[in-house]
Image 1 (tube, rainbow over the protein chains, first blue to last red):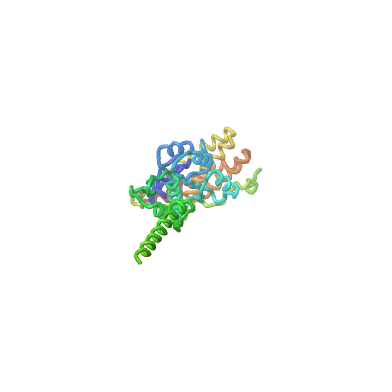
Image 2 (image 1 turned 90 degrees about the vertical axis):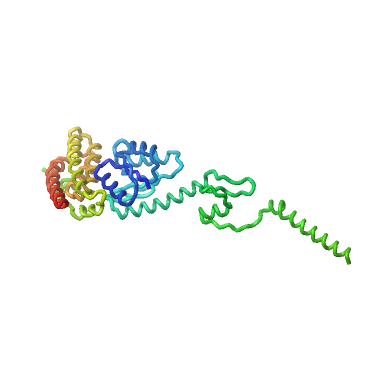
Length: 201
Length: 132
C-alpha cells in the first residue's frame, strides 16, 4: 500500500519510513498537514499515519480536511499518540475522522497489526464503492459487465463481492404478467387435448 | 531558592540512554540500509542542537506556546531513541510552557545542555560499537 507519513520531527519520520518500508509498503512523506494535503493531491495514498502536534496545520485539522475532500477512495487515518493521551483526546480525534491509534514510541509489531486492519477495511470500502458506482447492465437479460469485461448474472456478481445468497421467487407484478398467461396457456392446451381425445372416441 | 523537589516535576531521574530501546531499532536494519541505526543517531545528533536553540529562542521571546511545541518535538525524538533523561526534561518543559509558567523553567533549561552532552557521549559510544 502507499502510505503517507506526516511528522514534523525528522527522527521519528525516519523511523516510521524505515518501519513501513520493512513491512513492504511504499512511503511518501510530509512534515505538516498543509504539505500533506499537497501530497494527497498528486499521490494515490490509501493510508495516512499522521502525528497530532505539528506546526502550520496539526494532525486533527489535517484529518478534517482529508474527510472534507470529495474523492472516490477512502483514506484510512492512523494517529500515533503517547500512552498518556486521555480518553477525551482520543474522542476528539475520532470525531475529527481518525480511524485508529498507534502508541508512541513506535512499535513495529503494533504498526503491522494496524496496517492489516487498514488493508481489510479499505478492501471492503472499495467493494462498497464499486457496488454504489454505475454498473453496465444489459437492458434485456439484465446481465452485468464485471471488471474483467465478462457479462455475468447479477446474482453471481453480487454474491462474489458481498457473499449475499439469493432465494428466487416471483413478485406479484411478474406473476400476473408472466406466470398467469403461461398457466392460462397450459390450461388451454390441456383443454384442447381433452377435446381432441373426446372427438376421437 | 528552588530545591530539586520543588521544581514542579522537572528534576530528571531517568538514565541518560535506554540501550534496550536503542537495540529494538536495530531490528529495523535491512540489506538496503544496514547502517540505519548509526544514520539515525547522526540525524538525532544534528537535529537536537537545533531544537535546543529553538527552545532558548522561545524562552528569550517569552513565547510559551512555541516553547511547548518545540519541547514536544524534542520529547518525541528522545522517546524514539530511548534518551530518557533528555526526554524527561523536555516533558517537564512542555508541561510548564503549556501552562505558560515560564518563570519555573530556568532550572530545567539550565540542565538541558549537560543532559545533551551526556547523551551525545553515550550515543557516540553506541555508534562506535555498531560500526565494529
